[in-house]
Amino acid sequence: MKRLKKWMLPLFTLLLVAVGAAMPFIASYMQDAQQAEADIRPFDSFSLTLQQQGSDLSRILGTIASGSYYINEASKAEDVALTEGLALSATEELLTELVNYGLLNKETVARLYNPKIQAQRVIPVVYTNEEDINWAAAGTPGPDYDAFPGDYIEEDGISTWTITWDQPDNGWIWLDDASGKAVMIQIPGLSGLGLFDGSAAFGERVYARVENWRTFLSDYYSTEVQIADEEWYDEAVKFILSFPLGTGEDQEIFSLDLYFYFSYYFSILSPYVS
Image (tube, rainbow, N blue to C red; front, side):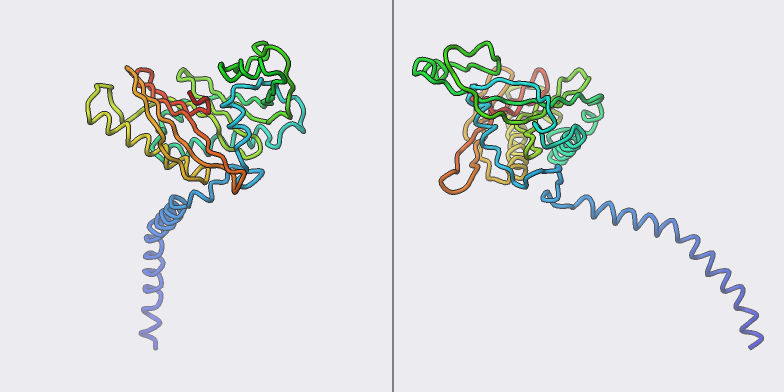
């Protein structure tokens, strides 16, 4: 018994030393486990602070694509569902997902500083005589109020947000207020494509990039996005991405133009389908 007591203190001391030495490794393991768990979170948990889960984007996309609208600043609190902080949070999470899908790199995001956030109302315009209807169908009036000829009536406005940054690459996001989702995206950088040389290898990299966009938008809009068409220019390419929105008899097919500008190193996703 005396011999046992004699060895208990040294053994206890050694145990404390061993535990102390292992603590950094235990802490590191726990941090790695937590990080791994965060990294594999499903896209469904992408919060985006949605006001209406699965909110239908049909009206805003259709209005912008038609060109028959103008824009007013949203001056009243009841005009918008999101706050400036929530709109910025939705944008920041969107940028994170664009990085995760290989469409943007972290270095480019780091250059996006001093965001400017503006609430606005998109006011759809409906023409009331046949001549103006034909004029609108033949041309694109655009978002300039003074460009609308003849007689028309205004429909209820759609609340949106624009987010821009003080940086030379001219990145910007246009968000739908009801859902917190982007309907237009311009992002700088085409990393990984290399210089435009017209080679088959360059074309393969471009197709891989547009496939990343297609996959991202399928998850982002919760619908099946397809590559409907493509058109190559001297130093740019346009893809038309089509997808259904709505259910049953209300389902419509919408399209987005996706441009890669090789010389200027930026991408634009827009409902202005040409």
